[in-house]
Amino acid sequence: MSYALIDTPLGPIGLGWESETLTGVDLAPEAVPGATPASNQGPPAAIARQLAAYFADGRCRFDLPVAIAGTPFQRRVWSAM
Image 1 (cartoon, rainbow, N blue to C red):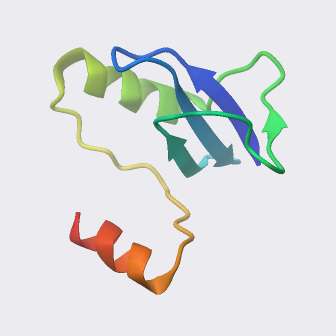
Image 2 (spheres, one colour):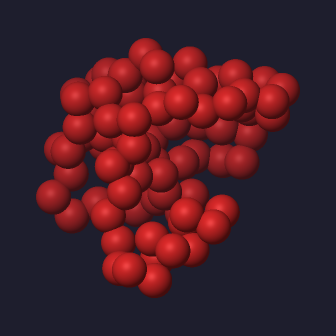
């Protein structure tokens, strides 16, 4: 997994991804066990573009591939959101 911190109007957030698939968004980023720093590169272009559009006007519709991992309860909550 690759990981990078990006600056946003909310402050820094952490993004995790594998290939072009978003694997995590951390609103209170710290060290992420098992993550590989992104070596001075940010997230893949599609992820960066859609997040920038969201923070620019809030009307972005996300269509990113996402790999969701969590407990059955967490997945039900995320699905409801």
